Amino acid sequence: MNESYRYEIVLYWSQVDQAYIADVPELAGCVADGATYQEAVANAEVVIAEWIATARELGRPIPEPQERRIIA
Image 1 (spheres, rainbow, N blue to C red):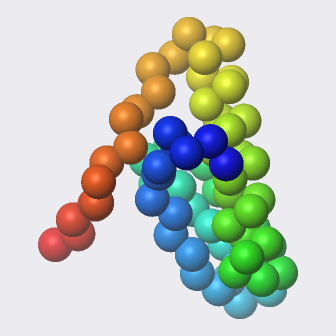
Image 2: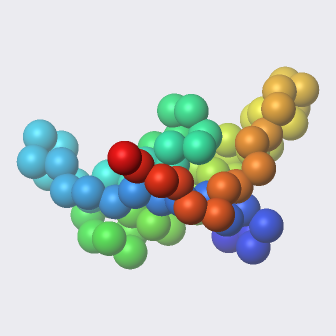
């Protein structure tokens, strides 16, 4: 993963999918899955890079990674 892509990844188990889900909330629609935590994170790194590449190709803005999301 490119070190400049420091986006939050939210990992959780999906009973429906029988897989770990890796959601990247700062990048709309950027989600991956995997059979293990490690696989889900590795797949998330791939889709983050693809999300950013696609946004660049389409001339769309790319959000800056936030240091930490605060949920109230």
